[in-house]
Image (tube, rainbow, N blue to C red):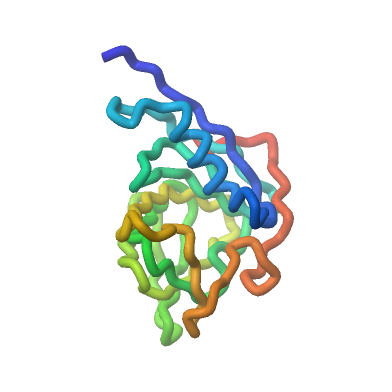
Length: 179
C-alpha cells in the first residue's frame, strides 16, 4: 500500500447555501468524487487555527462516515441542539471544552478526552479561551436514506449551524496551525 497522506484545507464558517449546502456538505461531496471509497484513505491531523470564530478540515470520509478537525478560537457549538440522524464523537486534541446537557449539567474535557453523542442527544459546548480548541470529530449517518445534516434545537425545530440563533461569528484565521 502506497502512503499518500492528504493535508486538508481548513474552511471557516459561512452561511449555508440552500442550493449547495453547508461547507461540510460541499467538502464531503467533493471528497467522495475524488476518492475510491473501496480503498484506504490516509490523512494528517493538521488544521489552521482561527484567531476568531471556528473552522473545520475534512480529513477522510465515506458515504456514511466522516472525520474532521474542528478548531475554535472562542465559543463552540453555542446553542443546545441535536443531530437526529447522526451519531458522533468529539475528542479534545488541544485546549479544553465544557459540554452542557439539556438540564444545564456540564462536563469539562481536556486533551485526549472525549464524548460520544448518540443521534438525537442534545448538547452544546464552549471552548476555554486560554488557547485555541482543537477537536477530532467523527460522525456517522444512522439512516442512509435520510440526510445526516439535520440539526434541531431543543424544541425539535431546524437550526442552522451558521446562524444568528447559533451565535455564529465570522471566522478569521491566524497564521498558526495545529499539527
